[in-house]
Length: 454
Image 1 (cartoon, rainbow, N blue to C red):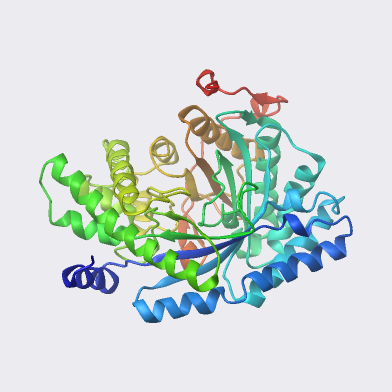
Image 2: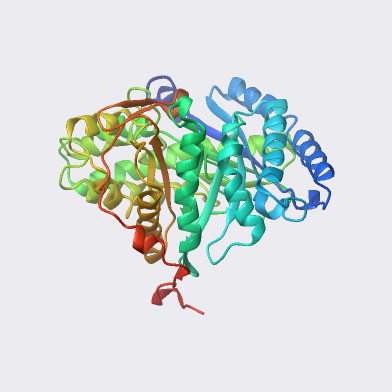
């Protein structure tokens, strides 16, 4: 039973500590829309999305009003479009028509992002996969709400290095195509290893092919809540520190579980998972970096940072799984640079580098996220960074991702402005030694020996 103390405590979290439900994401299967006629395919996709999601935004707003819980975003994820469009799309330009249909449908139902303009190519690319990947720069330049992802590796299959090379070129081309907006298109493109099928967070959300016709997934947040809780145990031992994080994560996840259940019931759509990730925003006091500094670091990036992040990530998961039987998605701590004021400050202070961020991704929920780099960075170097991050995910049997933004026309010392939840970011230096010969090798990196578990 929920007592009045817990109600009061939750209200305090919402009013003073930036607690919110970051997103209700409605997953919609488009498999039954497949058609060899491109016009008919687009018609079916638009009708399927607008019919299924017609009440999503209003239901979310009603839950906000009734329970007093901010729900920042209402979003949609769909079946990877490389699969849906394969029969009808013979060129990259054909896929762009689907991107525009998705964007139009998202605008009609009122969501801020729609994810699933995606390809799953961890072992190899079909012609459809390749065409979709090549269409991404134009698709992201000519739409407002589309988010795109490519899964290029997994622990079971290894890493498709042909896809990694193509993705490096695609990131660079997307930056060029959106250079008038500080290469904003790259902020909506993420490259994955071990991508989960039920992630509600953008830009990596898509609906896996093992899912049903529609599903409700909810992503919670709450870095500010964890930070405030840790202030009360400053100087205490690790046991008390860990218990505090676990208990706080439990409370945050219960809020997400409540919202997920209500949304599922009111929409008549099955509940899928709660993603209990600590997702920061540019708002003051809503920072994962500040949590790590509260644990005892002068600045994020100082010695001990990776250990502190490992502790935080693990305790968040332990607390969350006690609060919901269906925890999924990414779940843990995000470390995006542009969306976290503490991370931005650490870059300015010189304590946080790209190499340290890579080390931190070994123990966090995602990977190199929302990092602005010089626009002159070569496609091969971008592919090399992607390959490094994919290897971390593959070997460690975890999800890793790369969302790099080579900001055309800007260099180290400049700032990139993305706006809204995407924030702003200092341009970070990149190792400029060449890796072209490595990236140009064809084929794939084999799965690690510990992948053989059958």
